[in-house]
Image 1 (cartoon, rainbow, N blue to C red):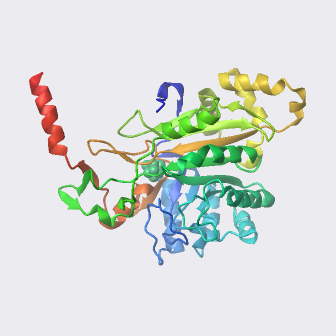
Image 2: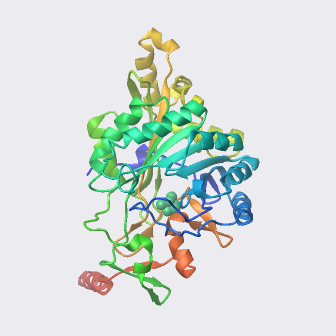
Image 3: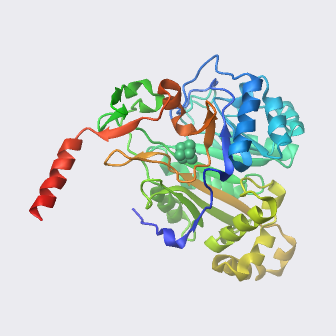
Length: 413
Ligand code: SF4
């Protein structure tokens, strides 16, 4: 596996109190049953509107943020989704809906747009048991992705992203999905690949303080067969094999393993005729820094019309080597003066890893933090809060053996 060097990339400046996005869960009810979901599907899972408003108020108090991901559960099922979008918009934040899209119609979309929705992240992959698409693979699902991207572009000026959970047997389709996104770069702004992970009950025991927990009670500890965790670098390598110029520009590292890449961002510059290259680390640093300087917030999502102004990004070529190269490549053809150049983000997310010694390696500067019981908590570990009120700690089953080995080694020296 390729080994990436952090020194070559920009560390996104996101942190606990000042971040690009923040997570809101108005419901835990869902109309699909995705294999990789880390929330229990509860039929009576809708929170009352007043409670959601209070959560938005608290999120806004605890955290400077550009956008709020309205997630769940399936947020479009919430009877007050329009009011939730309006409430977020009233705080001057970008409401982004994280949905499987199953009940989204054009009329519903128009209503959401009127309420102020800024963007959508559609979660679509082949392990959702989606009616009508049960045997479809990731590439066949591009037809469904296109349906939503087209709908958004027809209603106009709404950011369009796609999320997919990636499993060892579906990662082969990633280059094809990236290619599809590039072919539709005028209507698709972001592709996100979330690497499926599980806490392995065979290797670890779980405790809160001295109390052992039955981890089988947690939805993300159910072990499907043959699950082997995937690393962000593996996906990077897979995309690079198809497109040797592919490279990332920014990252978030892990809290316990600084060498790990938890969020790995690449930004492509292309139009429907040709791919020109990728944004470099200086370019993304300037974008994040200036956005914060002028708006007080780190940039989360951008409007489609902003992402269609890739040519203005080329001006940053004065500071960014990769953009400089693109500038000369692009303007070699003078007709390009009249053509659009789009930017499109590809984000690889490697959620929580449990390290050999049991430490849980989280995303440092977690953008998906949410609120529970008046405090900020990781949304990927909400089930622990709900079940026990605390996060659990993993300990390797062979911990004694590991300690013994280390002691012997030390005493020999
Ligand atoms: S720490 Fe968990 S909630 Fe935060 S970004 Fe990573 S996977 Fe998401």
